[in-house]
Length: 116
Image 1: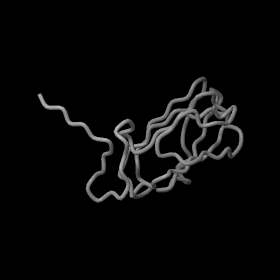
Image 2 (image 1 turned 90 degrees about the horizontal axis):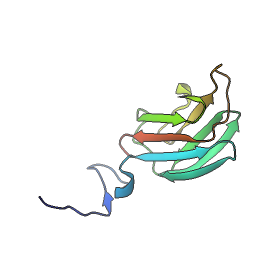
Image 3 (image 1 turned 180 degrees about the vertical axis):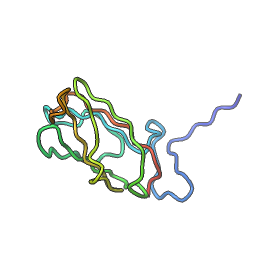
């Protein structure tokens, strides 16, 4: 068996390369109660848009708005606001069991797709 060691990964046609430690196009762990980004890859900022609502911005944009994401958050349900997605980021919403917007202590998302 061979070992392949690299520092960055870049798909054919992409202009941005990905660090091996973050093979997803982007990911983040966000504390909306503080608010603060606790850790991330390819996230330049997260804006607090109100109770339970925030928007991430990518360092390197996605090639289009049709990327895939999985998200979880502690003590809340989660969803994204589908009408505000873009290649540059997306607005997210965390809600309690009654579907009322509510700040989450840990909101974690993993984004997959092609970088621009």
